[in-house]
Image (tube, rainbow, N blue to C red; front, side):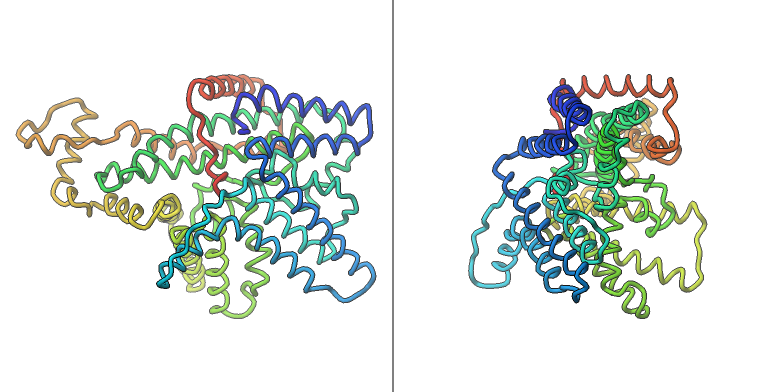
Amino acid sequence: MLFNSSIFIFAFLPLAFAGYFLLCRHSSQTLAHGFLVLASLFFYSWWNVVYLPLIVGSMVVNFYLGQQLRSGQEGGRRHNRWLLISGVVANLGLLGYFKYTDFFLENLSLLSDAHFEPLNLALPLAISFFTFQQIAYLVDSYRGETEENNFLTYAVFVSFFPQLIAGPIVHHKEMMPQFANQANRHIIPENIVRGLFIFAIGLFKKVIIADSFAVWANAGFADTEALTIYQGWATSWSYTFQLYFDFSGYTDMAIGLALLFNIVLPLNFNSPYKARDIQDFWRRWHMTLSRFLRDYVYIPLGGNRHGRFSTYRNLMATFVLGGIWHGAGWTFVFWGVLHGLALCVHRLWHRLGLRLWGWLGWLITINFVNLAWVFFRAENWGQAINLLRAMFGMSANERYDFSIQFVDTLSRWLNTPVYDWVPYRFRTVVVPEQTILACVLMLAMVLVFRNNNRFIKEQLPSTTMMWVAAVLFGCSVIQSVLSTTEVFLYFNF
């Protein structure tokens, strides 16, 4: 069930909202939480009920481990590091089996004379997100930072449907005190206004913007060998904006939905394409994943506490793991390597006391991010290399007609035939003017417009903005009904 589907917006969400607050008002909080867990598991199993026992079993085991870790501390006994390690290994083992078995078998076949048949395992929905969330819970329990003695409330923490499928990745201490707050058991009109506004903006980002760029990005990646230089850049930038508005839109919808239930989820995006360096980018992009990698990978590895070489090593290890988390493929690994190297270069640059003008730093950062996304999106090395060759005029047909394509594009825009003498075969290049114009407009928009994070806590949208959001919501719903709905990209991770 997708957030942008009609059945979710007009059936599931109203029933879940009404049922939860009716039980909060006329019954016990236990029944209200039980209803919310059942609704969330129904939401999860709508995709594939076969994997419902997987998430339920994972919650049972991790709740038990968390109890054991806390009881060990309360009794004053020595920290049971092996119990924590066992829990983390069990979670990663489950994730690894479904996500990386075929990747491992494929590479094992390449390295040996034997041939291993892939298992063709389907990736259970949301397994990467609820695995990381529960690993964080175990580590926090080991540190004595959680208090949870009720399995039902723990199940709410893991399965709460607004953030279940693709985050944000939350801590137990961030969310559960809000559910325990008696004031949050009642409908709060201000949160309804904020939630609906943010949800409408996120829906528009996904359905109108991201899905439009998806058409162009998919078409380009489907045939990278035939791309011209303009088509290459249009393809890469189309995916750059598709990914941003797809995941940003999902996160906005998740935050808006949670606000309807009086729950404030952590921010996940803060205008990352405005970043002036790569470190700033990772402080703004997928912020809860960046926080997880920092707190549970980078710092435990030693962070920056043991000299320069160790710092660079830890950065590289963290981002290689981040790349692998996103997908089982060498292109994801290389994407992680690129960002790890960029952060190492950034740290060394600042250590040497060097600085860039703000606009130049932004230009380098946004283009690096765009180029790195090519490997993130490509299905294989060949596809990525072909696109990069097209982008830099190195494909077979680009070596001789770059200037002619430029004149051809200018001619199309001006609607003036300025070179009738050019051989006809050089005038058949298809340049996606609409795509290029859309990319330029989107880049201007993300640079000029403020994000809607301020509406979560700071202020209510104005009446005018609510009307605008209502129009955007209506257009998005109509578009969802009339066209094929694209699955959220991060559902694949």
